[in-house]
Amino acid sequence: DAGVTQSPTHLIKTRGQQVTLRCSPKSGHDTVSWYQQALGQGPQFIFQYYEEEERQRGNFPDRFSGHQFPNYSSELNVNALLLGDSALYLCASSSNSGRMNTEAFFGQGTRLTVV
Amino acid sequence: LAKTTQPISMDSYEGQEVNITCSHNNIATNDYITWYQQFPSQGPRFIIQGYKTKVTNEVASLFIPADRKSSTLSLPRVSLSDTAVYYCLVGDPLMNYGGSQGNLIFGKGTKLSVKP
Image (cartoon, rainbow over all chains, first blue to last red):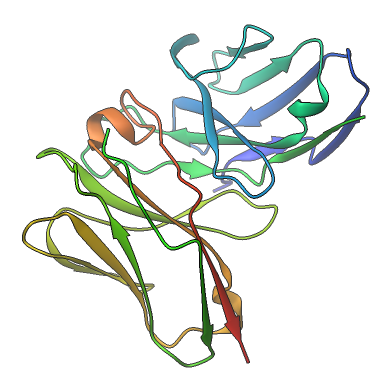
């Protein structure tokens, strides 16, 4: 049973470019959340997708957008990249079962460097 | 959402028991306490979750006093591989655990360094 998989693992982009990161959730999970983690900081919530719709969003500009596909996989798109967008981008999947002990499973992340 | 306070860093030696305390004075009635572990360049990994008293699994124990304003993650006999950042999160599982509705709120965590 594969866990959460993210691609690519590393990426280097130039300021002003656009980037797309991909995530496949753990088998049986239907909810995908994206987090940005700057060096030395805890992960910061970007947004969450469920049933192919953005359900909740953190304090990130509209340059950050996403998509969820019918197979529950997800993409994170960032437009007009800034140097400050350099970070580890994490995808977490979970199940919308409503169980009290629902836990989120994280992928290894994509290390984005903007130069 | 309850705010948490943890030590920024801790040092230990192999074989010792490590206790990391988290303060959450404004914890709400429906809030659970969850701990995640994160190694460099990897995603956080769920360790343990509890509501009150004591919870134990194969990895750690979680102690929560009656007033629930703090909690202590206990790692028995740590090894070098336990060197990581440990995050304490507090919230309503139905609203704040990336599951049915919400998202996870991470602080800066506690960087644990285990030395030989």
